[in-house]
Amino acid sequence: MNKKVITVTVNIDMDEKTLEDKVNELEKLVEALDGEVVLSLTQKKSYIDKAFYVGKGKVNEIKDYCEKLDAEFVVFNNELTGSQVKNLEEIIGIRVIDRTNLILDIFSERARTKEAKLQVKLAKLKYTLPRLSALRSGFSRQQGGIGGKGIGEQQIELDRRTINREISNITLQLKEIEKNRNEIRKKRINSIEPIISLIGYTNAGKSTLINKLISYGKDENSEIKEVFVKDMLFATLDTFVREGLLLNGSKVMYVDTVGFVSDIPHNLVESFKGTLEEIKYSDLILHVIDISNRNVDEQIKITNDMIKKLECNDKKLIYVFNKLDKITDENIKLEYANIEDKVFISAKSDEDIIILLNEIEKKLFSSLVKTRLLIPYDSQKILSNILNNYSPKFIEHIANGCFLEVFLKPEDYLIYKGYEVNEK
Image (cartoon, rainbow, N blue to C red; front, side):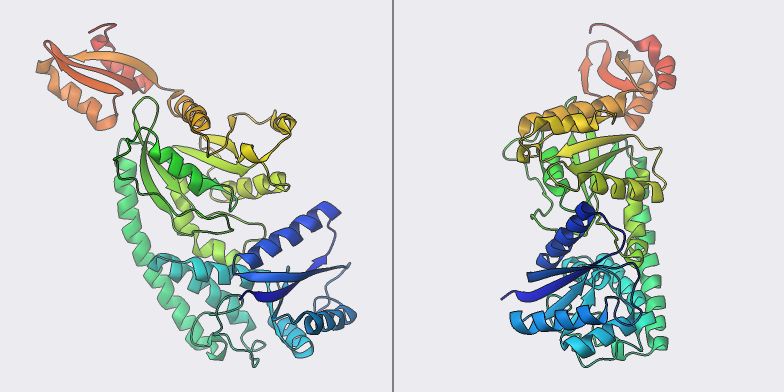
């Protein structure tokens, strides 16, 4: 059975639309941990109450609603201090958690790989450390679902020295994992296939899109290792790398990254930074956007801020406005007329995938020169150089040499121009 939850959002200098979006997003975060929001409360304030975050009167109101609705948790849409959590729990009488803790709990639930589990545990420890003394309440940290699991073995009972030692230990383990990942990444970077990273707000449709992209050009009998898809926030945390084909037959590597959300905990961003840095090594970024979301502009800004934070502003980028099938007003496209390098699609549409693949090819090969070369059999070193650095659209061995069609960098085109032919 879903746990009954009351959410509380304090409005400090927010307009009505932003407030509504914040409340809706928190409700979806609660649902992502199988919680049922029975009531969403808001309070407009010009300052934060040091003891309770909200006013004392609001605390009593929350307590009354909890009793009437049999609520099991109260989730605040703001980050609380340890003492605020303790003070609220003493009056309300049930477990109180904040947005940061909720997101950390979701990540704990979703983590599958050893690295993801360590990253989340590290963020949890860093969140708990400054709250240690205030969080010594009688509420169990071992429950499942919302507010559950904590960081294992009742972390609030561990002293600072133990937590700091564990932080150091996890940091060392992550450095070792990162070292191994860098070796794998190095091989991928040195390969001839371009790397395309998908980035965007959580639940924008990245995983659905990557599954469609890697399926293109494959026959029905081909084994396709799809990534997990579910219509929920943070359905998956792991970074996936999959091979795909472009329209011209060139191979590419698609990288699916963890989605973002507003006010994502700083410790979580820091913990996942190594994973997110996959984006730095991309030849192209697909910024996937849910055009049907009412808060689409804010989501674009949050993702762009993350791209900037990762120092990837100089990367080639396509804005992929996804979920076109969910909108009825085609005029919404006009609102983004000033954005260059964009495409409007539904990841469910095969025709739209072709449109996107066309744009990917244009962007990847815009600076390349398409040419046909005939390399004589006594010039195999030339052919070897080309094949080591490029993936030809096609290659054929004929009587007087090796015939291939390939996209070359301008400087390489000048080197191999002497082998150019119009026909076989």
